Amino acid sequence: MQASETLKTVVRETYTAVANQSRQQNASSCCGSGPSCCSPVDDAAIMADDYSQIDGYVAEADLGLGCGLPTQFARIQPGDTVIDLGSGAGNDCFVARHETGPAGKVIGIDFTDAMIDRARRNADQLGFKNVEFRFGDIEQMPVADASANVVVSNCVLNLVPNKRAMFREIFRVLKPGGHFSISDIVLQGQLPGNLRDAAELYAGCVSGAIQKADYLALIQETGFTNLTIQKDKPVFLPDDILRAYLTPDEIAAYRQSGTGIVSVTVYAEKPGSDVSSSPKTRVQLSDLTSNANKACQPGSGCC
Image (cartoon, rainbow, N blue to C red; front, side, top):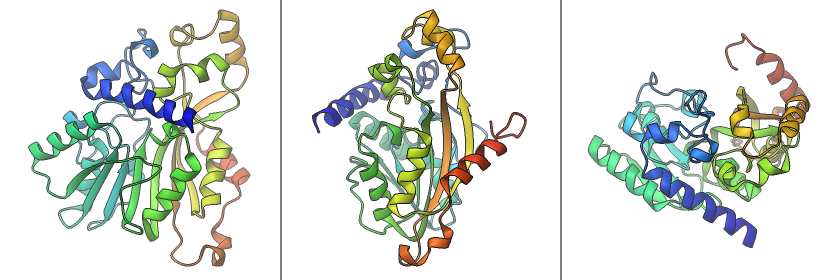
C-alpha cells in the first residue's frame, strides 16, 4: 500500500508540473516526463500521436501526453455518455464531445488538481456545457454504477498501481453492452532494471507498464468480451535517452534482447447479459497477440 501511494505521489507531482507547461515543453519529453527523458535528436514526443486532424480537436487542451488516439477508435455515438480516465487538460474529452453531440455527456476524471483546473478553464472558454471534469482516483471512480456507454483513456492506465482494481472500476461504471477503447503502454520482455526504477521514466509512461500478455489477461479476467487490439505501435527509445539509465554495453544488450515497449489501443465490451452465458465471445490471448503482430508489420499502416 505504501509503495502504491508513493508512486501516486510521484505521478501527481510530475503531472502538476506538466499542467503548468505548454504543449511545446511537454512535446519535447516522453509523455511529458521532463527534460531527463527528452531526446534532443528529434525534439519531438516519443510516444504521442497527432490529433490535429481529428474533428473536435482543441489545441489548447493538447499537452502532448498521449501514446495513441483512443477516441478515433472508440465507436462513440450521438447521445452517448463517455468517461475519459486521466483526462488531463481535456483533449480526449473535447474530441469525444464532438462525437456525442449536444445530446451526449462527457466526464473527465483526473487526480491532479492543476489538470482539473486547466481542463475546466478550457471547457468554460469553449462554452461546453455537457463536459464535466471530476477530481478522483481511477481505482475508485466518482461515478455511479452502469452510467457510461463508452470509456476512453490515453497513456494513463499504466501509471495506476492497482490495475486489477482499475479494470474492475471500468467494468462497474460501464452500462451492460458498453465498451472501452484505451491507448496504453505495455511491455514485451523485461526492461532493464535501471529503466523500470527511474521515477522520471515511470511518470513518463514506461516503467509503470506491465507485460502485454498480462495486461490482456487482466481485461479478460475482469469479464470483458470481444477483446480486440485496434492498434499496436512499437516505441523506439533513442540512445541519447537510454544513456541516462544504461551503459553502452547495456544499451547494446537491450537492442539485441527482443524486449519491446509498445503502445497499444485495446477495445473490449461489457457483456449485455450474465458474463457466464457468453463464453463464445472470449478470445484466446495467443491468437490475439499473433494476429496483432501479423497485422502490424511495417507498411501495414498501424505501426
